[in-house]
Structure formats: C-alpha cells, structure tokens
Image 1 (cartoon, rainbow over the protein chains, first blue to last red):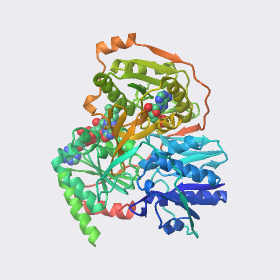
Image 2 (image 1 turned 180 degrees about the vertical axis):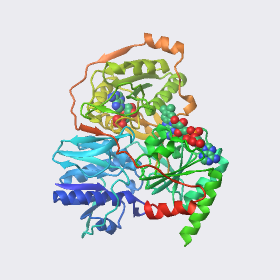
Image 3 (image 1 turned 120 degrees about the vertical axis):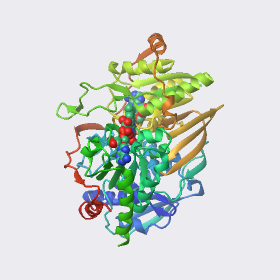
Image 4 (image 1 turned 90 degrees about the vertical axis):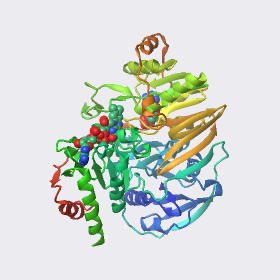
Length: 318
Length: 248
Ligand SMILES: Cc1cc2nc3c(=O)[nH]c(=O)nc-3n(C[C@H](O)[C@H](O)[C@H](O)COP(=O)(O)OP(=O)(O)OC[C@H]3O[C@@H](n4cnc5c(N)ncnc54)[C@H](O)[C@@H]3O)c2cc1C
Ligand SMILES: Nc1ncnc2c1ncn2[C@@H]1O[C@H](COP(=O)(O)O)[C@@H](O)[C@H]1O
C-alpha cells in the first residue's frame, strides 16, 4: 500500500501545485503509516519533493514525454500504480492533471473525485469533501473501492514542509504509439496564469473599454498577480476568453481576488467563491459584489486604482 | 459524419442551491433546468458541422423522464434525433459506462461532451468515455475542424493554447471558445415545431458499476460582514491587506 502523487514540473522546476500535493500526501501518509511516492516526467532535480515529505520519486524519462500528452502520461502513471501497489493517487487541479485523471481512472479501474478541498473525513471507506455546483456548495463523496484517485483543488491545502530522505529511481516509458500529434504549444510568456496565481486582479464592464486595461495590468504587475475579467468583457473581445472567470469560465481559488468594476452577478461569484480574501472596488455602493466581499471601496476605478498602484509601489519599496 | 453530443441537464446558472432529505439530495423545487453551458457550446459546433458538412447530430442523456424537455430543446436547436437512457445516475463512472454501451452500437465519428457539468463538476464523463471506447480525447477544447478523417483541435492549457492533430474517432470536452457566444442558437418557432416530430428514443440502461456515492451536501459557511474602507484611505486598505488579511 502506498500513496502516489503526480508531481508536475515546468521549465525544469516543480510547480507549486506539485509541492502542495506532496504536503497533502504527506499528511495522509502519516495518518495511514504508508509510503509517499512521487512520479515525475523528464525531471531530475527531485530534492525539493523531499522537503515536502516525499520518500521516493520515480522519474520517467523519454524524449517522447517531453511534451505533455494525457494518454501517454496516464499510461505511465497506471504502470507505476500497478508496479508499486499504490492504492491512492493524488493529482492537482491543473488543466493537465484533470485531463489525464479520467483516463487513468478507467485504466486502473479506480474511483475518482475531483475538486477535493481538504483532508479525508475518513479513510475506510475513503470519504472526502469536494466542491460542487461550481463552488456554490460542497458534497461529501464516498469512494468505497480498492483504488482511488483524488484531485485536490489548487491552493486548498497549502504548502507544509516535512523533510524526508528521498530516494530516486528511473523508469522507462511504457506508452504506446498513437496518431495523436501535438503540433504547437503557444504560451503567453512571462505571464502568471489564473490557475497558479496567489493574487488575481479582475476587471469588469465598469472599466468602460479595453484601452483602460493598463489599470488592471499595472495593478497586477505591482502585486505579481494574474489578470482576469468578467464574461461580458471577454464576450465583447476586450480581453481573451482565457481570462473569463466565473461559472462558465475559469474557477479562481487565489488568496486574494480583487474585483474592479465588476457588479458581482451570481454566475461571476460562483467561480471566484473559493478565493480566500475578496477586495471589491466599485462606484456603486449598492453593487451586489459588496455582499460577497471581505474588503470594499466605494469609488471610481479611474481614481482609486491609480492611487492604489502608487501606494502599493511605495509600500513594496519600504 | 456521425456526431453524438452528450447532454447534461443542469440547474440554471441563477439557481439558488438548496438541499432536502437531511442534506442528502438537491432541492429541485422551483429550479429551472437548462442544457449544461459547455454542452451547448458543443451542440452548437455539432449543428454547424451538420449544416456545412451534412453531419448527422444525435443527442443523448442518461436521466429520468424529467430530462426530456432539455432533449427537446436540443432537437429544436437542430439535433436530428435524441436518446434517453432511462436511469437516474449515481456517478460519472456509471454515466460513462452507459454512454459507451450506446456508442459501441452506433460507431460515432465524433463524440462531444462538456468539459464539465456545472452541477456535479466532475470533469469525468468525456475522458472516461474516451478511455472505454479507445478513442482519442481532447478536453478544454476551444477549436475543432475536421478534414476527412483528421481532426484539428485546439485545447486551452494553463497560460496558453495547444494545437493538436489526430485521427477520428475523437471525444472532445467542449467549453467556451469552441464557438462564439453570438453563434449560440435560440430555438425559433419552426425549430420547436420540428422538434416535436423528431425521434426521442428511450433506451433501457445496461448493467453498470458505481464507484462513488454522495453521503451529504452542505453550503459554504456564512461569511463575515464586509469591511468598507473610504476611497481616500488607501493607506488603511493596504495596511488591512498586509496586517489583517496577510495576503500582500
Ligand atoms: C448562463 C450565464 C452564464 C454566465 N456566466 C458568467 C461567468 O462565468 N462569469 C461572469 O462574470 N459572468 C457570467 N454571466 C454574466 C453575469 O450574469 C453578468 O452579466 C456579468 O458578470 C456582469 O459583468 P460585469 O460585472 O463586468 O458588468 P456589469 O454588470 O455591467 O457591472 C459593471 C459594474 O461596474 C461598476 N462601475 C461602473 N463604472 C465604474 C467606475 N468608474 N469605477 C468602478 N466601478 C464602476 C458598476 O457599478 C457595475 O457594478 C453569465 C450569465 C449567464 C446568463
Ligand atoms: N447524465 C448524463 N447524460 C449525458 N451526458 C452527461 C451526463 N452527465 C455528464 N454528461 C456529459 O459529461 C460532461 C461532463 O460532466 P461531468 O463529468 O459530470 O463534469 C457533461 O458536460 C456532459 O456532456
């Protein structure tokens, strides 16, 4: 019996969600008294995983695995599960992890729960809390199976160091040839993504037009934050669809969510509900968003935001 | 080309979420049901292939008779025929098995489902279905063209876009961006009349397993009151974010 995490890396470094998963896995491994194993692809600098409690890392290396493909990665993870008697697989909520999870679940005939928000409530049978109705509610999910997969909502557990001696082994690729060709990957370089961000700065229709988005971008870069927007803003083409957050867009689970000129419609709130602290800047004191906020400023974005940027810069320099 | 669109029948996005039966069941009282928004993007793309390339579009749902109005709406939007597998499903694992039993009989070239449903948010069914069928799979799909037996798809990743080429048959998990918002089809009177004549076949469920159950639901804890800061007190705001909330 063991617990396996899929440790995702990017540009030669483990992603924050991989370290969060290690921390989460360590807590469960301690409870059960079992080994915490990580699988990583084409990555050799594994010591950081040990800092967060991983005891053994299985590195699967092959030029064919250089770029992520769900089918190949799932096939390799399935093989690690079978060879190591793994009973519980932990995945993050990154786009890639959620892509491969259902493929892995079928291939190892495991139960699967996504959007898990905390430690198991019981281990036998495995019972966990997950969010549903797009963050409007939670449900307790019971997974009474030999083998289970959990995908943890990003930023819901946090990082906890618990250093372990870590050993590393290598494994070769077991995936088979497919006709699936990854032709091109376009990445917006240097930008923080909504999924990984600790702070998200979001603009709504109150910003009047795309020409004013420098306010959102400047505030975001001052805070090291990702930028986001409401649905109409992306529908009108002011911002790319990938920035649309909410029930029909992306979920946001950042530590701080700053909403500027966003009214706070129920569909918008649904997607950002699991952010820990919400700051709302809106000219209308009656804007519904204030009811869902932790901090609120009634004011004109065109006056408040420049001042906020300036004062934050001073604060950061002090 | 034969296209199947998997339809999840979900509460309208404005619905208040409440639970009954000792918090073990969703309270459907007064709730409007709609086509899951991700499925609607997929259906719209399917109807485009039907109009431009003579594809045949079938819609299917695993659910009870109460889902039929949602299927009729899909027919009014333009689907050619509908199936309902008569089972109130317990989990996504079971839904994927039911759907795959149907797909094995029909040999669809393209199966479209939503990236995730807005009620259960499982993000399970399309991937599991592709695995059962041994078909290619692209989720978070924001672009799809078909040339002969080859699909060209785009997938949204964290911080970018991937372009993929693969052979049919293919399963996609559709989402916003696959079609433009303005291309969504609002059924007109003619569509609604035609939908009444189209076939909606009820299929018995096959034997299937479940892998998870829901023991209870809960709503988020009520939140504390908002702290308002005067717009000329930005320093105080920064202080609160730093010292009280500890987020900057
Ligand atoms: C099926 C469905 C799904 C949807 N899904 C989503 C979703 O996922 N995400 C989403 O965001 N929406 C979604 N919506 C849309 C949602 O209902 C709202 O229409 C939308 O969120 C409103 O966007 P907004 O707040 O930017 O614009 P508005 O509602 O127009 O609000 C603009 C706000 O800006 C404020 N303002 C104006 N001028 C200033 C100024 N100078 N300074 C400061 N504030 C100012 C105004 O007081 C107002 O509160 C969905 C709708 C439907 C029907
Ligand atoms: N009961 C169902 N019947 C048919 N399709 C479904 C059903 N449940 C989910 N799906 C499809 O699978 C997608 C993802 O659902 P889920 O895995 O629940 O997030 C939905 O958008 C639908 O396309």
